[in-house]
Image 1 (tube, rainbow, N blue to C red):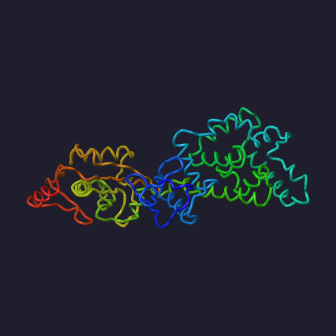
Image 2 (image 1 turned 180 degrees about the vertical axis):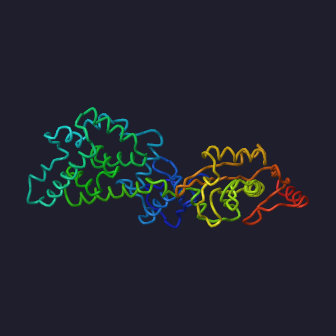
Image 3 (image 1 turned 180 degrees about the horizontal axis):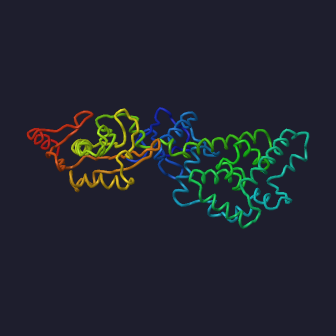
Length: 397
């Protein structure tokens, strides 16, 4: 749903919906869209909750100034589609960057970063002059630390490498800050890389603003703070709330079950086929019922154990073992209805086995165990006797 001018947000009609692999913000009964028509969707629910809080507080979206919504939309509408204005015009932007000019030609004055207008009326602008010169001293030192070389070629190569290494969210910040404040690209890069603070950025960007007033400083400062707040929600994978993290927070239920390990018996400290059988039983039951998720590497109380406990050489070996058992014990024809994903939570790996409802009956035929037909019975998996299974199959499939 694209709202006209993004006004008229009704907080009670905002909702965060979890899908198979991501989350999306809904307004009324439709996904909320960016100005470019992309869904407000992401694999980190924490970031989307941040956006929802902003929408709830403002009751509208300000598309004229830098905001979390604008930064998120820029990622969706431009960067994810391969359109990066800074990258496209990199050579031109670098050659005209006022900070780079000041670094490579310290005796040359640049009109965007001097205080001539304020010097014309020092009594009227004494406070702002102090701020500008204070900011200039801080940025000068910060720039020397950030850009060690005085060679033009080396400096440009360094900036190129640094920009290419930025995440999309950081590139969005550089694009929007540079365009909004005429601050070049070096100054925004120093901000997003935490080389300078939001207030130091505002002080350094202030001379490029037409007003040179406390109000203009405040506006730039607020936008820099909003930028860093947005980046804070995307900078650390350990802090993200993925689909798997959200599922763990729900606790076990009819469609969700936790298993500490896939093959390792923690009590006996050895591999145990019965542990594998318990996991396969849950998968089979989900397939025969309404579908669901098995999370391996999570204890019953929701604490993270990690599939590392199963002692495979790497994640690929773990998944290969899981799929080999599924194919040999449940059948290769169920593959379209099962998807496995891995996610790092608190430094440990959790495996999600997402099962869709199977269009035909599925039996568990694991070597060393009887052939059994399982279904979900409340928050657990149970077997059916032959007569019960036949009746269930006749009604269900």
